[in-house]
Image (cartoon, rainbow, N blue to C red; front, side):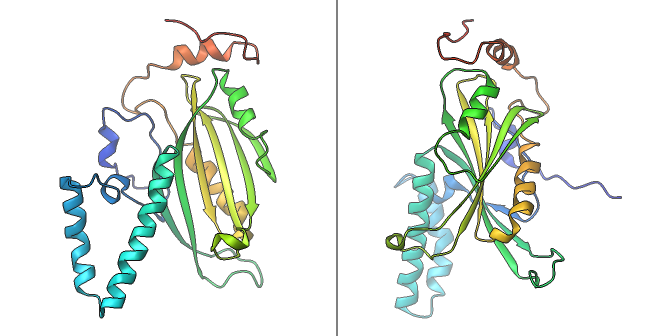
Length: 246
């Protein structure tokens, strides 16, 4: 059996990186920095240059304006995600190859993956993970996990956009994984979204496998947050205790 091939992204050696993970095959990362550059910056000029061939190839002015409008809508969506703490997102494209009578014809399945940071009150990580799925989010499925990076929870929701949202009236499956950071002050939220609701178990497995690869320490470096995490994890499950001091 051949070993899987891993391709290291340039951000792997980023000195400011706070999380590492392995993105499964079939996902294409969207470069948030390149797609949301500061106006007047060199990155903005690079984006204009990259978009120019598509605009020049437009068969008509109408097609050109439609391309610009769709691109602007995409930027608006990514900007909104970044404002709420999203630092990574990618588009998944997989072939539906599940062998079930009448449910699979090899059609392509689309999904959208995001990784976001959330601030939390200081508490043991297991408590923080449990709280993440006890709020009123309408989770239809909840699972508690012990991952290599620490305790975590997975929650699953299915919602249909409101009629006045302007979105297609298709049920949207979202699988959330909540992984508290070792500093016990925040957690990372992994979300995998798709309209392929019938494949909920498969998408849940994909997200869990991804969550199992998460590390808050550089895999080739030395971690520095384990001591603080161990200290806070021993606290009783309430908010009356101050954070540990150095």
